[in-house]
Amino acid sequence: MLAAPKAEGTTRMLVLVVGPSGAGKDSLLNAARDGFRDDPRIHFVRRVITRPPDPHGENHEPVTAAAFASREFALSWSAHGLRYGIPMDAPRAAPVVVANVSRGVIADAARRFPTRVIEVTAPAEVLAARLAARGRETAAEMANRLARTAAILDGVPVEIVCNDGTLEAGVERFVAALRRVMREASGP
Image (cartoon, rainbow, N blue to C red):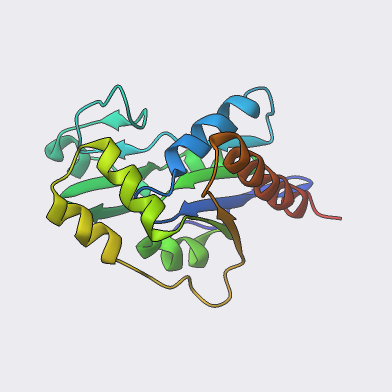
């Protein structure tokens, strides 16, 4: 098990971004990554996924199942027939490290790293419309995604960002949540 990484004078913080499919996590993360591009205090993780590149989706590192199995990850999980991983060195990349993850890895992360969660949400009708617009899934697959719910763990601080309007409004809320976590990571 990895020890919680520390940096002299700062507390390292792993910020886990979770939320249902269609909540807009990738859009918010991409905009925040651009906004914090020159800030060395924050690093946005590029996930490793057993999925081909998608020019309209997340800029992930695509790998085969065999290549995935041969690597070690700080965090990894399976979802929707794919494998996802957070590179081993990612938690030490900056004082605040932001990663889009499955809720299923929160407990493992919280045992190993100082962890905060940002949950991106939207009303069910907004999620359904966004999933339909993506066009990647059948109606049954979309219904399964929309039916999934999972609780956040007690004891892990959570910021909730409602992304139910314009992209600009969602980004503003998301960046504000990140700034609160960054202030906490900086300490008194």
